[in-house]
Length: 90
Image (cartoon, rainbow, N blue to C red; front, side, top):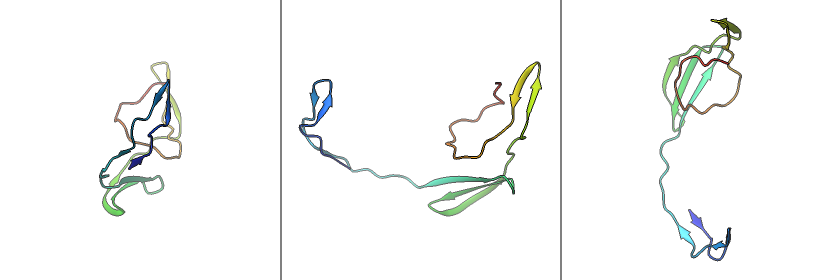
């Protein structure tokens, strides 16, 4: 990566002192895709299927538990897996 910042106004009265070059290596592309119809998650590594798992997508409904409304709805879309947690209350 080349950052041509010499003399560039970086804000707050700071200017780039020198251009910078950084060499880096990015790891394997790991993508998990979930198919609601088949209830299957397919994990690929660099485009090759690595594993498949059965998954539960959740109910398309809201329920009341101990007086609190809880959603089991999983909207369609792209997600970044960051954590595994218990049911979250609304």
